[in-house]
Image (tube, rainbow, N blue to C red; front, top):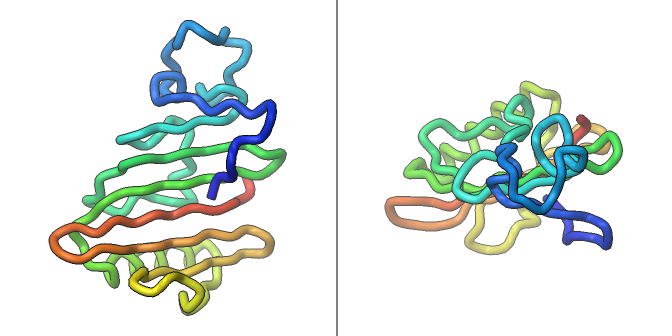
Amino acid sequence: MPSSPRPGDRTVGAAVAAGEDDGEHGDEDRGEDGTENGHGTATAGLMAGFPTDVIPLLPGATVTASAVRTSGDRLEVSLSGTSTKSADAILAFYDKTFRKQGFESTDGRTLAPGTGGRIYARGDEVLLVAVEGAGARRSFSVGGTVQR
């Protein structure tokens, strides 16, 4: 998941992530994906440049936040959302998706009680899927560090 901002890092809002001018930074500060220096956060939507080829959005889910931060040849990514699907269905979707890409999963015993989830690894790339909530909707988060 994205780490806390470090000195010199800049996080941008959804308008800049979408390539809109926020009036504070020139175009020369933006990466090819429209985010400032390859960094960005979008709330209530999937930010421009989010690597959906690695972390696809669960079908039928609502995105509550997403973020991407470039760090050398790595992307630090996070995706949060809600879904009416069961925790098992959410985990099964990401399990199938990540295994097809060569990630191997853990059994999830390292997560907090009351939270379902798994940790996936492929070489030195790591992704975490966590699901919590009861009732009609569940919240889920997917995040980690992957190669560009």
